Amino acid sequence: MKYKAFIFDLDGTLVNSSLDLANAVNELREHYKLEKLDLETILSYIGNGALKLVERSFKDTDIEPKEALKLFLDYYEEGIYNETDFYPNVEDFLKELKSKKIPAVILTNKPQKMTDILIEKMEANHFFQYIYGPDQFGKKPDPSGLKKCLDLLGVEPSEALMVGDHHTDIFAANSSKVDSVFLTYGFGKIGDSKPDYVFDSFKELFKFL
Image 1 (cartoon, rainbow, N blue to C red):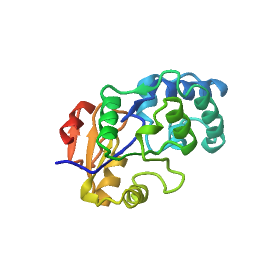
Image 2 (cartoon, rainbow, N blue to C red; image 1 turned 120 degrees about the vertical axis):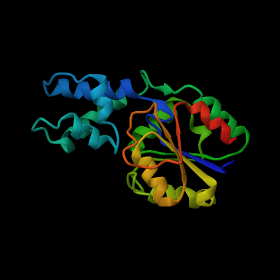
Image 3 (cartoon, one colour; image 1 turned 60 degrees about the vertical axis):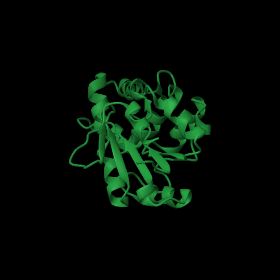
């Protein structure tokens, strides 16, 4: 089956931002005189946006997450592109989409400002027709952002594929009647979501071209 549009999650799907996110979390914890968390623990806290990451990273403290969020974003912005890069095969796939004039969209729960900064630093804007964080349409699994992308692209739900690494991506796709791919290498968990495909490598997506 060939799709007319591909809609991607960002962190844990297109890019491995784990070290930069973890470093920002631990800089924030150091600011509050707390011990650092290990990478695996921090990765288990990723999903549903930056505020949730802060909440989970400080769940056993009396620190107010909303107050700590701004400082976390400051730390993260400072080191947003120190270690982050595309996962294997992602850039080749995006190049292939571009050459075939198949639209690609980012739909992420990462704040819009951070998303824009990262994509600009990666010099990857040219791959995507639209890049949306949660600011306008809400966070996945809310399907509003995905439905808006379909409207803007002028494609039917059956003509698009949602690709992500977390159950929030899959639930958003299910609610929109869009086929979905769950990538096992990412940060997220499949939970009780029901993706149409489960892939261990981004390379498997080439079968759809």
